[in-house]
Length: 183
Image (tube, rainbow, N blue to C red; front, side, top):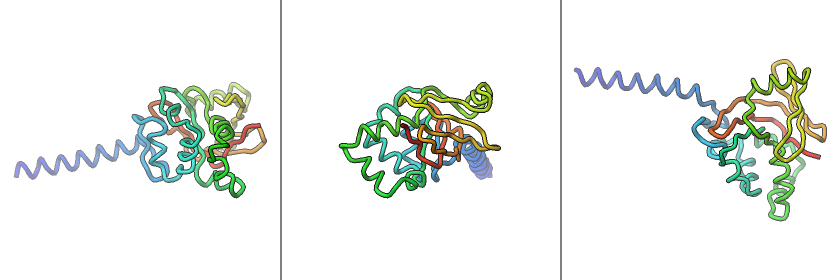
């Protein structure tokens, strides 16, 4: 009887612990994102970011995004890449287009760890709009539309953050619904 009670307690404890733990690790693309893993190790598990992961590999940015950082990554989903003209992604991942691909991907990265609170603070300080400098050297502009965080790229395109504050050991990811494009 004692073993039965201990076993039941262990199962209940595991279920409770798993539930609490899962709440701390948001789901992105059907996979839990762990704050103890780096950006790449989490992204490879998201079924919604297979195109981004392939592009990061093709651009040779894996080691960079596995480094200490911290980085803020605005991570386009597969659906975001699908909005690009037909053949664009296939063309960009070709070895001869590595420089262009690298430019586009690093345009989605801001140095430092800017979670939604830090971005909101920057928006407030900017009088309703924040200017963010990307690792690529370009600029993004951020503002709120109701409860949605919107980003504008240098070509005038906009993207909405669909999942914010996915913490990583080397930064934070914000999932976006459109690929951002530099000049």
